[in-house]
Length: 515
Image (cartoon, rainbow, N blue to C red; front, side, top):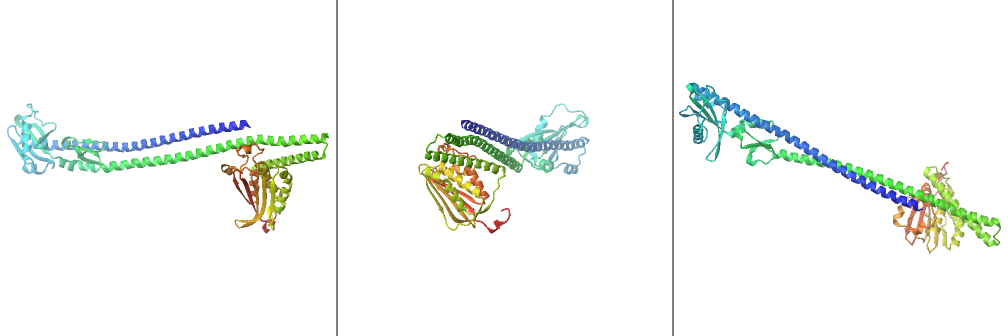
């Protein structure tokens, strides 16, 4: 008896440890999945921003190249015309980019305004003169300079971007061609078409920059930067949150599914463990149950056979003990055999038109001597005019035997048994209600859900000290269900228990063969 209990505790402990380890593993996997999902989402977002940054760099480089190419071509053409001594005013007025504001030429002696600027003429002329004062002393040969020189000046608080091209005229006379660059027109004419092809970028002043990164513009646009638009940044943030949320939700659902499956497996494992322990206890209990009546039957049988019993009263007492133990042994074997057939799905019943009152009275009369021997107050009440029921007589008798046997074993100081039969109607069906009431130790509320399970026995010490297999009520439940009846139990600790069995009445259709 001790070994199964210890094994059960160990199995439960290992089951709980395995369950806890499985839960921790599932949580760790879920967290890893969420982190991985967030990292993947952020990687996708970073990849998009990296592509945009590459586009921004391409725009900045392309703008600088276009600006330098167009500027070099324009200034070289003016230098060639100035060196040849023929500069057409009409040509100067319209054949140059609009972002070139004013044209100036210096021939070594005089600064000439070739095309007047739209604004800040005096400031531009002053800055050109200042540049000439700091010009290189050595001039290139009879070729134009490689490219323009960009000079950033500030005059009266306004930034000026000037471009100069150094060359030599006839007989080595130096020539300097200068122009002012308008950044606003550069943004409109050069940068805007490129930005139209790169959705998600904007050009803003450097002091107003606030994106996740920025790309500075070259040359005349040095005070401006390219950055992702706020709309793109916000959209990408929501996308990251949405992807993270979906990934987290899917991971959570997977985690819940995994936990549910593990909980089910743990529950099944515990149930199997409990069933294994109950079966182990059952083997021990059955061994005891079989040994005790067999030992008594053998002892009193050998005593009677030896002739050592001299009085008739003693012989009658011994015969009663042998009969009682034989009945108990028969009932035990019947329960075991019936449960084995039920568990294997091979149990069959012979349903007939049956008088429930007669079957109950026969069982009650068989137990009356035992009830009186144990000083029970007992009573059988059978109502008049009970309808016949569709039942297997032996199975119905076995139900009553098991219930009365439990009353005998689990009654306390107040020994009381009342069996009552009456007419009843349930769910529109007429039938007979059999009530078996005692005033015994009662049943704990938490154990009622397992009351009709095979091998189940209460942990109550008052129950454990009585012999039993835990099969009686399981067989009762199965028999009642097979009769299409219902079984209810009402119990209070120390106040007693009442079992109510409703069996439907015999119908004319039950006369059919095989019913």
